[in-house]
Image 1 (spheres, rainbow, N blue to C red):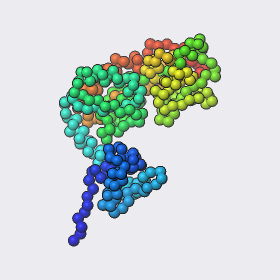
Image 2: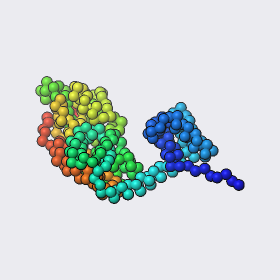
Image 3: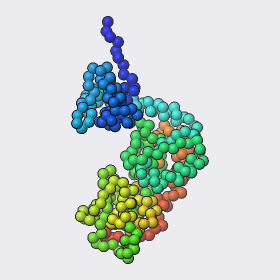
Length: 312
């Protein structure tokens, strides 16, 4: 008689999936709320059931074997299916109370969302809001968030939503330095630029093509870091007008350039758009951000000309 076939549970597959995605046992353990020794033991038990290794232990981390790659892919497909079914069921719930998870950038979490969330929770005390900050897009198909507030001109086709504004960009400099220079900018003015995931911003590409490389003396991968550095007096740089115009220590050096603007999109998954709490939040947030459109689009503030100084 053959021995009974040992089966893997979803919890087993989930552990394999997160190890494969993280490539690191400690990071994977933290992601699912267990300690590293438990993750190590569980992986050993799973490999014993299958009688084969699922990962190669290298100095650089855990690398899936062919069998490991197959199980990681299976677990990812199952996760999407589980989340999809759950979303369709909960999406029919018209209760306005409950948790809403919002994915957005540090810029919007700091400069746009706080008054919106304060007003929304005051009107809907049963709502619980969680904001997840990051410049990378979370996967709404996998249930990583309910709503996304993103700067993009090409929202993902698998999401639905609306464009609530255009995000204007303009060049800024420390106000005191600008005033002391009588509103003029020296030819050797230092500039700050973006790097990493923000290097592809329209404003950054615009700057890189107009300012000699030796005059770009600082780079950062956050808008917040850019704003703080410019306010401290390190030359000039580009910021969203909703940030630069709100900081009294900064002076705008020129008008916003429409060609460098990005769309501000409020997005969700199609299965969630009719969910009571998500629908109510989307409507409230869209209305609140529409009222702030002049602020977001940088209208009403005139700056000095910046021709020849990396700004236009």
